[in-house]
Structure formats: structure tokens, C-alpha cells
Length: 86
Image (tube, rainbow, N blue to C red; front, side, top):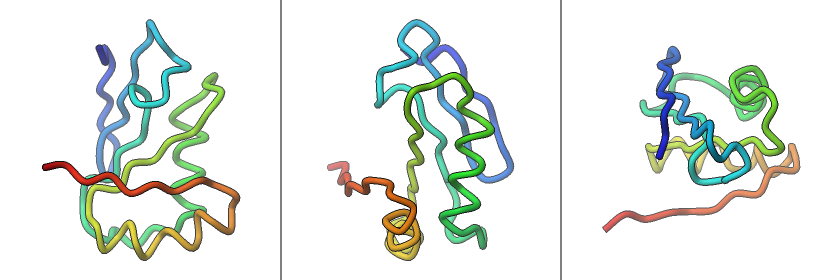
């Protein structure tokens, strides 16, 4: 589904150009534990790397990092969800 995989300094930007409004197929993935970025830093990355989308989505793969960032994203008005893969 995702036809664009673009590396960035701390992960991968994933895009599905056929469905730019589909939430799950368009995101910025943070793939390493605690790179020292704040929620505001990640929101700025999403703004820069997801131009033209109606939404912004950041996936944080490391649980501890996601937990630490959650308050900052909440303060920015973002909606956080927890996803567990089994």
C-alpha cells in the first residue's frame, strides 16, 4: 500500500500517495529509543515531512519514549493512542 518510504534521521516517513487521507498509511515513524527530541520537535518534523496532508501522525516504536512524549503531545492538542502488536 505504501509506495513512499523516506528515511529521516531517526526513522522513516511512510506515505501512500494513492490514499493521502488514510490515517494508518501516512505517518512519521520514530524508530529509535529516546533520540532527545521533544513532542514539539516531532510535531515540527511531521509538519515538514507530511506537507499537503489533512492530518499529522507520528508513530513512536519505543514504549518508554512514547510514554515520555505523551504529555507533550497532549499539551499540543494531539490525540495519543497506544497500539500493541502481538
